[in-house]
Picture (tube, rainbow, N blue to C red):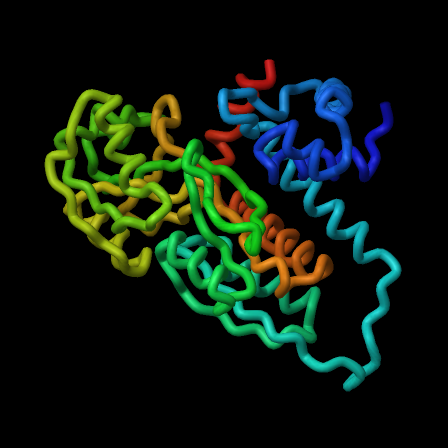
Length: 319
């Protein structure tokens, strides 16, 4: 089989729908035909892209990597042959964009402005993903980057759509003098006696997923500091030994702070591009997604601790 754009669209449809059956309905296929198509695509790549579960399917780690590249290819293909309008020929298109606490935003905006210079872009910070959904539903936003967690996928009405940008493991930030500083990976249970910095309820499942992981590891956190501020301030406090924190896998640590993977990867977070269907055309939607995916890949390139973990973990998963 030769890989074609239609195969990439099948992968995107399954990932967006979270189910082979729902994706088949969206694309006008029968479920058996869609399942057969997926099997052929996975045979082409030589690895499983989706894991089946009781509620549908979920991307594997390798599938997440392939999907991000597929989105980028589709966005680039859609742009082939398009010519920019003459100066002054187009009225700037307004786009109201919001984002939760994510490192993707800055790189995404740089790429978006370069690819769609006629956008009149306004950006706001909205931490709770539940509030982001409400603003989209009410027509107060056009698009946003939100977060959710495996098994707690973003819920919204038919007026809103979403695509998963990436599902990443959550790591832990430790002071450089921490007793576990020499460990390549850290067991969550070994941090039972540490104080924690936790961001507040995001309306999408955090910090509930953290406490559930702690219970599964056999402990309740000894002390918790609720914190929602800039990353520099958080890292300063971690570096001073005041506590530890779950952090994004691509976090760039300052001197005095170490970032380590958690053994068994008990916590995952998915970044999601959500938009109001009537507000975005395909060009803007595809460009938003491609910009976010490219920004995330750039973050990985700047995160040696993440690349080391991925090379070790994914190489084992692909054997």
